[in-house]
Image 1 (tube, rainbow, N blue to C red):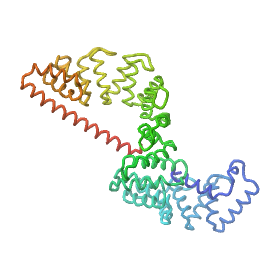
Image 2 (image 1 turned 45 degrees about the vertical axis):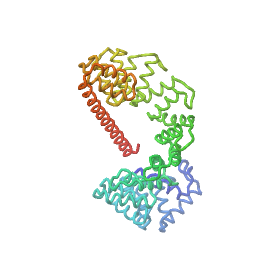
Image 3 (image 1 turned 90 degrees about the vertical axis):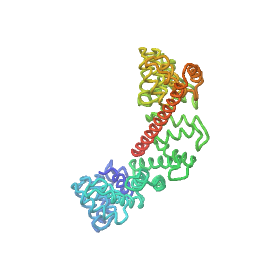
Image 4 (image 1 turned 180 degrees about the vertical axis):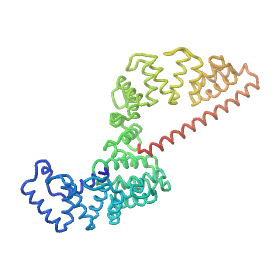
Length: 473
């Protein structure tokens, strides 16, 4: 049976059902038998509620022998009398091809249309799904959105969430963050959900509504409101909300700064496998922030995050191996983790890996490799790497000797690095005015290249965030 429909059907039918839960396990008592007989009499006389109850009893074998054909018959009776719930259930049965109904999307569409015309929220939602997928009807994005909106307006939280996502991402409609926030709120404020399926959707809406307030998208930026909604989702176990709630406590954003609470929520998310939370929890243990300082725990959490591919954690784990922090000193392991992080574009790791190659630390000495990794880090604005590149070009180590390149890298690093300024002053005394001019021009060129590269990385980061949003992460 369709997952979206099952919790609704079960919730409604159990609510209608007068039999206690024990009846399903031990058979009906004489009194329950009398009640069943009354349902049957009422159903045969055309009582719609009784017909729905009998359909449920026969469908699930509660107190009676399970009989899908009788279940289908009673649901059909209720549906043909114009009962929207019966029509919706019948649509679900035909769409799933079970409980005695043959697989027939056209019949499913027929009954859902009947129920939707009466304002049935789940029938409208099912219609939207079929138009979106082209099942039983021609695929039609506009019709899908029409029925999603109908279902959302009827109070269906699945449709409300879907509509919010459409507005947030500009899929099928013009992007409208205010509309997205509005529908997230409607979904988030729903008090009644049908089983774990819908509760999970509501929890996602809580998280995205929090993000709206945190980022000021579609609503006025309000860190306090962001914390409010993060907390609601975090308490439902949403790992992303747990992480962001921890960040709020760590930074004092929208709530009083509280390192202990930050650790509490980092741990909640970290134990669910969130790599970012594992990384930050490791940092708390390393620094003794909100928890007793414990380097072994720090290293353990860095490793968990590193093994999931978190570049910052990989770099920190490399440092742990260099310093023997929570592990035995091991330069080769340090190089291994530096490389993992460096290959993901971590500038600190790229610099350290270059340094390891330059001095043969944990790896065979290789000036060409050193220059290669220094270049990558320098290209991301790392002043230390720029200083070392200046040395390599000045001495011709691992690269052709080039005083213009040495000048440019030291000039670039000299903005923030005193050693670079000292080296540059010495070099300038040996250079002709024309060479210094070329060095200055090369400095500007490098600066542009770095700025362009950093802008590209920022674009990539934003694209990754958009993709994360698209997936509901």
